[in-house]
Length: 117
Image (cartoon, rainbow, N blue to C red):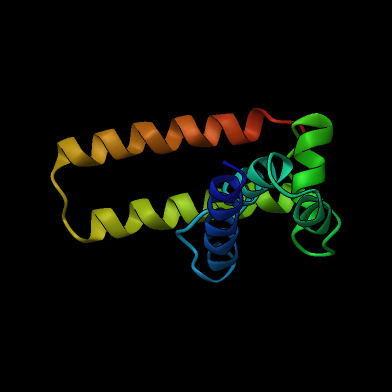
């Protein structure tokens, strides 16, 4: 079972790192998942991730107080607006745009109602 948790943690970590470079792929949710998996499988990997100078702060903020940094909130909002703008530009059907707008608004509401780190 431990190997399964480590594998899931490494996969989530890989996706989280990719999210740093790909604007439409979320970073922090995958890092939180990696920390969760590592906590169940490898204290060494969990400690490394939590104390990493770049990857660790958003995880620590979330674990401490459910907080999201102001920069993170702004970047998430810009990404959501960009995705919706691309969808409009591609001429997607109004029904699809309405569903997408509802999902993005719900996500944005969740993000902006969290405390700022």
